[in-house]
Structures are given as structure tokens and as C-alpha cells.
Amino acid sequence: MPETDARPATLPDPRRWKALIFIGLAQLMVVLDATIVNIALPSAQTDLGISDGNRQWVITAYALAFGGLLLFGGRIADLWGRKRTFIVGLTGFALASALGGAAANTAMLLGARALQGVFGALLAPAALSLLAVTFTEARERAKAFGIYGAIAGGGGAIGLILGGLLTEYMNWRWTFFVNIPFAIVAAVGAVLVIREPAEGRNRNKLDVPGVLLVTTGLVSLVYGFTRAESNGWTAGSTLGLFAAAVVLLTAFVLVELKVKAPLLPLRVVLDRNRGGVYLSLGMAVIGMFGLFLFLTYYLQIVLGYSPVLTGVAFLPMVAGMITGSTQIGARLMTRVPARYLMAPGFLVASVGMFLLTHIGLDTSYPALILPGLVLMGLGMGTAFMPAMSLATHGVQPRDAGVASAMVNTSQQVGGAIGTALLNTIAASATTSWLTAHAAAATSPAAAKAVQFQGMVHGFTTAIWVSFGILVAAAAVAFTFINAGRPGAAGSGEGAGSAESNEVPVLVH
Image 1 (tube, rainbow, N blue to C red):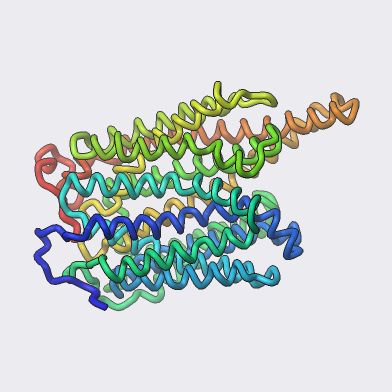
Image 2 (cartoon, rainbow, N blue to C red):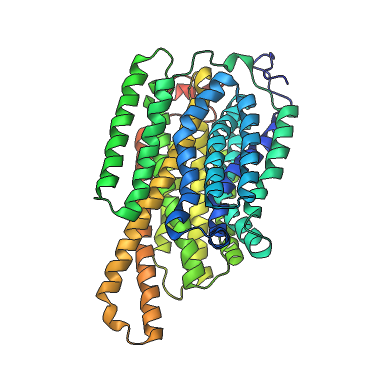
């Protein structure tokens, strides 16, 4: 199996658009898996007898393995070859999915979810860095990243729809088995059409201390937020995990400054453009997770939607994301500096979030929820577009994999933090509201109405926080990102001058 291609880097790969199909398919599979299992979880819990205390681990086992190992996966892609890592990741993800679908008990299911996270951590950065080295012409690069951004942004909502359909009309196990055909098609396509330039390979040895420190540090951080949700923010176990995360990640930074071949060269994150992308994208994902989490519960429990109808209700947001990425972001990416796409994109999304803070017990979907979702989709799609491209802005070829991994890391860690943080805020607000209005529950019907009102109050409180986080993400993007047009920016570190706009970027 040829791993590299010795063609001159200036000549575009004639099979690059076919390659995009299979890279996009793999990315869709990974993103789908983040939400598709959520809807199937109640059925799986009943079928396997999973306790209430253990059910969160079906989600958390995946997030811990994925978020904790992403930087490792990105560096493996740089060292071992992105195409090879991509195919191994696909194969392992398919096998782990088969194991999950066949799970006979709780331990088997949790093990399968952790394995999915491990192989997803290989697959995701390999996919994004393959995209970066395959598309080198400015306008084509803009279009390719637009399609990829639409998949990355809309896949989660598609997962809700697919999860609802499979759970309602087939069986929860098919939310795992559905990954297998995705992986087979993407792997076969990768073998046949994907090429990787030879000059982009990193030949240095793997930074083992860095791997151990950043993996345990990120796992401690994510696990700390998970424990905060159940034990409280001031519990000894929660504070201990946060303290461990600070110590481990600080030690990681010190090691990276000393070693000859660091896992994460600090030049990758200290560049103000890439650093601004990682930070603003991570913050935006915190807000997005709040929307998915609370709106899903609101539609099903308060408004009485079925799992399938809940998934369909998110479709306008998917359409908005695709439109924002491919029609707005891709068209303007080579003409407008990145911060003038990202900051307004996050602000448009925050307007959509603001509308959703006004939900009530009998809110009209067409009048309020629909426009809120469309604005969220348009804004996030427009912002994701240049963010995905700027993730590898100005990186040296040997760092493309780890720079790509940082995008996924910021999203995964942001998602895990957002879930725990916003869940805690919502639960606290609901409890306070119910305590203050307990006297109104004078009959069973009144008690149910009070319960729903308390739930909606908790949701809207958390969505207000999400709104604030999105506004802050816009401010970060506008302040830190100073690159020119991302599809046509200079390839040097920190290229942000007007002159650099005239030089197309070539990331090999």
C-alpha cells in the first residue's frame, strides 16, 4: 500500500475531490458517534441493566479516551504517516463499534465505548491533517474546508435524527453497528485514492513523557468536571482532580520546553492565530453543547416530542450550518480576513441562543425555536469554516497532525466541560426555583406544571450562560486572530499583514 507520493508539491492531486469524500465520511462517523448513542442510552440501560450511577459512563468513557488521547493521535499521524493512521483508526473504530453493538453487559459496553474513543483519537486528527496536505490551492482549500466544516458542525444533529430512527424502529444496538459500513467504505476509499506527500513526515522519536503527562492531565480535567456534576464543585474528589490536572499540565508544558522532539511544539499553540482559533472554538463548543443537551430534553419532556421528531426538529440547524460553511464561509474565506468571519459568526449564533432563552411551557416551534436554530446553524457554520483552515495556518509540515489534533482537543475538552458546567448550573437553578415555588403544587396537575416550569427555568438559565460564552468566543476571535484571508494567507508564522494576503498558503 503506497503511503506517500513523490509528485511535486505544487501540482494538485488529481484524485483530491474523491479523497475528500472518504475523509468527510470518516469525520461524519466520528461526529455522529458523539450524539447518536445519547438517544439510544435509555434503551441500552434497560436492556443491559445498567445502573443510574453507571449510565453516564457510556458517554464519559468515550469522551475521556477521545479527549485525553487526541494530541497523542495527532503526533502518531505525523510520525507514522497520516494515511496509515487514518486507516488503522477506521479499522479499530469499526471493531470497537461491533463490540459495542454485541455488548452482553455493562462492562463490555463501557470497554467498547473507551476503545471507540482511543481509535477516534487516531482517526480525527489524521483526517483533518490529510485534508490540509491534500488541498493546497487557495480557493479549492476554502471549498474543501467548507464541506469539512459543515460535516463537523452538522454531524451531531444528524446523529440525533439517526439515533432516534434506529432506536425507535430497529434496536439500540444499531447505533453501534451503523458505524461499520461507514468505516469499511472510508477505509477502502482511503487505500484506493488518498495520497500523502512524502516531505510532510516527521521522523523524530515519540515524546513518551509528554504523552503520559498530557493524557493524564486532560483525563483529570475532563473527569474533574464530570465529578463536579455529580459530587459538587467543592467536593474533595473534584478539587483533587482539578489540582492534579493543573500539576500534570504544567509539568507537560515544562517538559515540552526541554525535550528535543516535543509531543506538542509550543510554537503550534503560541501563534496568536492558531491559539485564538483553539480558544474561541473550544468556548463556542461549550455553548453548543448546552444547546444540544437542554433543547433535546426540552423538546422530548416538556413539549412531548418523540425521539425521531426531536431529531427532525434539529434539521434546520444542520441546513444553516451547511449554508454557513459552504455558501457564506467558503465564498468569503479568500476575500475576508478570518476574524471578520469568525467573530460575526459567533455573534449571529449568540443571537440564536438569545432567542432560545425565551422558551416556555407552550413555546411555538415555528415562531421561536426554528429561527433560533437557523441563526445558530448559520453563525456556527460561518465561523467553523475559517477556524478549520486556520488550525494549520503557518504550521511547519511536520506539525500538521498535531495542529489538527488541537482543534479536536479544544472541541472535545470544551464539550466535556460544557456538559458538566451547564448541567450543574441548570440543576442548581431548577432546584432553587422548585424550592421557592413548592407552595404552588396544590394538586397533581399543578405539581406537574411546577416541575416543568422549574425544568424550563433551569434550561433557560444555562442557555443564558451559553449565550454569554458565545459572545466571549466572538471577542476572543476578534482580538487574537489577525491573519489575512485564511484561504490565501501567508504560510509564515503569524502572517497577518496585508501583504501576506497575496501569497497562497501551501501546507504539505
